[in-house]
Length: 256
View 1 (cartoon, rainbow, N blue to C red):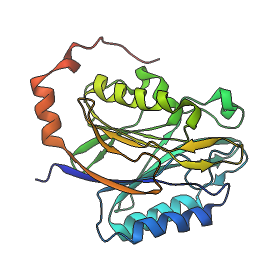
View 2: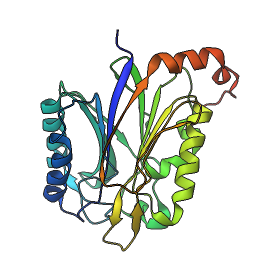
View 3: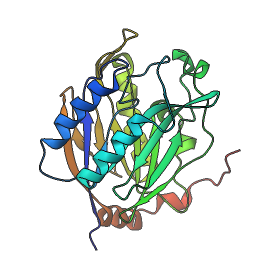
View 4: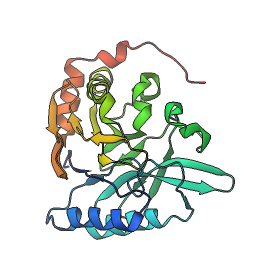
């Protein structure tokens, strides 16, 4: 049984509130590669940028695009989009599998400094996805600052993902917190950030990272506009946890 997970992350600029232009950019990066990764990861609000004025009604055109890409590449794909449902709007993480199965995570921690809470409704459900023998926890951007929400409890997840629009002004916090989440949860962590400048004048310099359970950086995208790939080993993770069973000593708690 193959216990490796081949992942690709895409770090790029986003065209403000223009899904079709963003789709074309991602397609160029995805379809020029001959390999089919197990999982493709996109930034937060990959279709529009971190806008408080743009959303799609369900069924979402962006979710339809993700479904088509997933099927054609036979790769799962994860990213977030703004989705309207009735009077509510969510910053929704969408994990789409090649067989059409979809799992959604609504961002819990809304970025009040950027007035995200004035537009979007916070989620309340913690989500774990089972895919190719891996347990994957998908989160979004500002969730990174709140370690209790990502705390690894039984049954333990293996991979923690943050898709983000994390400004350059606070990029050192991004890199430090990603490494902390990997070490404290004894898991792989993937953080996918964007590049460029958005419609609010904020600048982004990427620094997307893949970090292993011991805090070692496996992939550092720096400020490059590209698709990056690496392989994660479930066997190595399980061996490390068996040798250093730190998770078993964690304080018990219940989120309310």
